[in-house]
Image 1 (cartoon, rainbow, N blue to C red):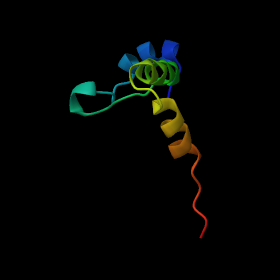
Image 2 (image 1 turned 90 degrees about the vertical axis):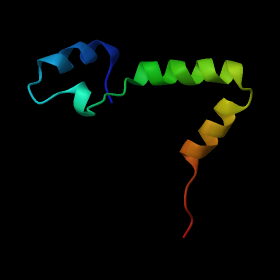
Image 3 (image 1 turned 180 degrees about the vertical axis):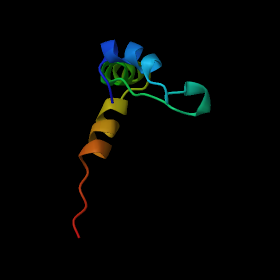
Image 4 (image 1 turned 90 degrees about the horizontal axis):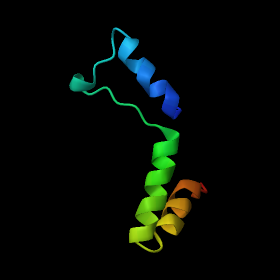
Amino acid sequence: MLQYHNKAHLLNIPSWNWKEGDDAICLAELKLGFIAQSCLAQGLSTMLANLFSMRSFI
């Protein structure tokens, strides 16, 4: 997980190759994407919050 301004530095890493499946997740893009999706599907943000906060009681 990266901050947005660090994504540009990935191209300088010799072993980094997005064509072979390397991928990066930007926290700001992820958060804004969830906000955008919750505008389209009401209740999505609640469902995601419940999924991320679930704990197993064993």
